[in-house]
Image 1 (spheres, rainbow, N blue to C red):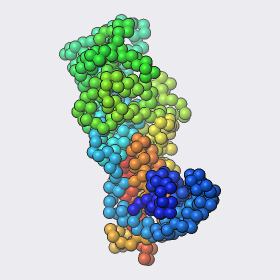
Image 2 (image 1 turned 60 degrees about the vertical axis):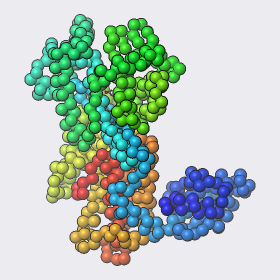
Image 3 (image 1 turned 180 degrees about the horizontal axis):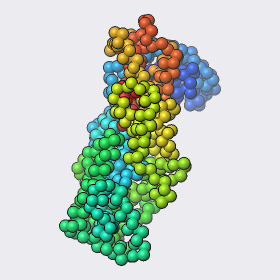
Length: 566
Ligand code: ARG
């Protein structure tokens, strides 16, 4: 039985039907400090039922409760504090972790249901921004969390590979571009042409007409337009892939906006049939006033479809293809309104699964407290950030552990892991500041700190193995000192953390948890001689092994490597 259930059962035995098991469980609190016990039950809610002061009720419960499984049950004011039997508890929990290994903490919340995750989705011919980085790493972590909870995540990169900007790009390329230039440095050159277009069209508005004509040609499948578009797309994708490889992120689908070109007529037809389309100054819209939203613009005056039209087609396609139980969109919070409109139109279309569409928004990355802005020169180029992070990690490894084998690979894993961890430890809706030196520190609330703690645990286990001491799968694991107790309580909390992270779509729960566990372990390590040859050696090694297992799994859920040595 789980520790919480033990407490609930003991309370139930005393209280009978006064409160249900669920109500008792709800009421249980975790005291701020372990010195106050492992669980506390506040007696306030019973005051009315018993017509007595909560203090008195707490004292009576504490007097009557069965002491089996507990070291002590004590009333303090209106609270009943429970102290678990440490030896018994450590036995159960360590045995569970050793037996289950990386599967410890797995949940069955999803019953193997499909969950498409729309994530990353950068725009062709532009550099991947820090916003796209957030979407990529949050989406990747959510995919891992969902899988652990027995969902089937499907990672979809909804590339921004269609739209009027491609008309501008083609026009700009025809005017000023060269094939050799683009080949040498695709993203930067294409961006340069695009930026130049926006400068020059102020004085030469005829450029816009040309661009519109090119986009029209593209939509009509003109050979040259298509050839250029395909080429821009594949060059861009190549450079995106380099970044994804560095981040260790893979996708199940690259069906971007263009993929839906032949699937939008159906949307327009459905909207027409359901009499949802209205004319408004030549354009076609769906009125969303009853949702308190602006109308959704489905088709422009010139017949061109829009971002939301493509998203409607994509939503329908995903429902048909994956028959999803939920459909997630990890996209910055500046698009909140767009996703509200998307859901509202689907609702108007009578699609009951509109309720399973969830926008997972996130906040901005700032620098020196300011919004990033290309114009103000506050740009962060993702590729450079990753390279710099790896370089910083390399320097620190060089100083700490110059003889480390495969230093290069470890530096990659630490540098890139640091950037990912920093992003994920912040609650996703918070804006946060990016300062590379902070991010790659080996001390403090960083990814390298957690990785380092894991490597330390692994090193203890290696030393033990060298001395002939292996962790036995079934041994006696009773530990009852306060430092190991803190570590054990953290380990025991892991399954609940996984559940919370999944339910709230919040990887930061796991990142913060990993920091707590690492901290508790380092404190333990500072106070305890693990490798001392006495009767508890086996139990201490089991604890260290469990820490390594849970730290590694936590990092894995965030998409961060856990090197064995660093
Ligand atoms: N390409 C878009 C952008 O960079 C994000 C696309 C998000 N996904 C979607 N299905 N709308 O802003």
